[in-house]
Image 1 (cartoon, rainbow, N blue to C red):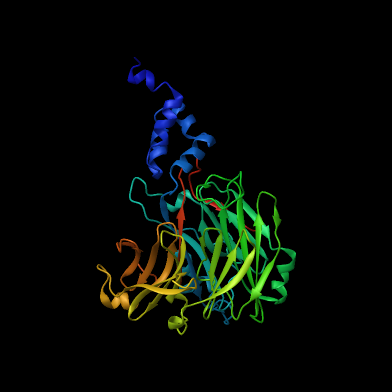
Image 2: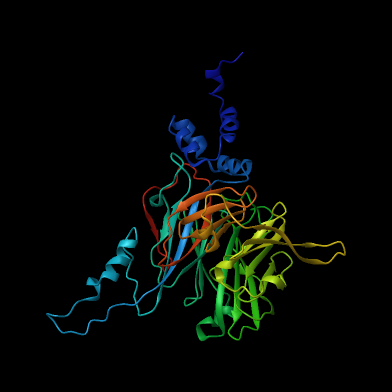
Length: 427
């Protein structure tokens, strides 16, 4: 009969034990400190792939916050020695103090917008991962964060007609030019574009929820014509490095860039301004428009609509915020076999948020895996779990900028880099 010490010499048995450890950030890193053999096992890519598949729901590490700020720059008019440089103005110094690292030369211009991602961790110590552990974009003047999914983050530059995909934990990056047919955005043929990313299974090339360690991904690009009459969609596959066919459909408005898309099965849904939702089936290569419920089409504030997953994440939902509360709608088949919107429930008050703050709350983020919404109020930013109705405080509210929260999930496996890492999307 083998002793416990002898059993721990069996690497196959060790792998099975390690496989059943909880997928929290500190688990594997602490175990890897025991000895070099454990570290070698825990850092093996094959084991890490098994670990991610054994735990289909990686932990929510936190949120990337994207803030948009309109500002003016001081234009000095006096001659030296009375000339006060713009850098000495309070606002310039305020901007620099707002960043963890002073922004690289931004090329400030009057009335322009600053858009930058800052990570807000949500886990408690010892699983809390500080911002300094992430690879972050450095030059942001031409790029806007679009969202995160399956451990990847994506930014888009309309002026450069390119999409930038990177893994914030290991720094792997891909810079993808728009397909040639959609690069006319520089000449004004397209008014607004949006991008979303997802990992795919290495073997089947299908969208897969447990591919956090897969180098393969699919990238979906949505563009709208300048006359708002037509929208286009196209899929890029990293395995082949090629864009697929461009499909189009008639629309009456443009995509809401401050509202990230959601993925249900193989279909990407995007909110449009006005009353439309754009649905793109990646596998069938079909693009069509879904009308919002007639009862809510008069509400057009960007922060008052949020696409959701409902019915065990299989159906499209829509949250609508008004002074009366939050109404949750679900799109499903009725008894006559016709697909339509059904009012699922009403949320009129939340315990832990003052009634006045809740009435003026804005929906500023959504985690499609946990079905968690981010609410911004004057008393702070909160996570609302729509299934349990539990709330959790995230951070104080910054009222000087529109802030969007993009949930970031991944396995913080051993061997990841440490220290603040800057990724230059312009290289």
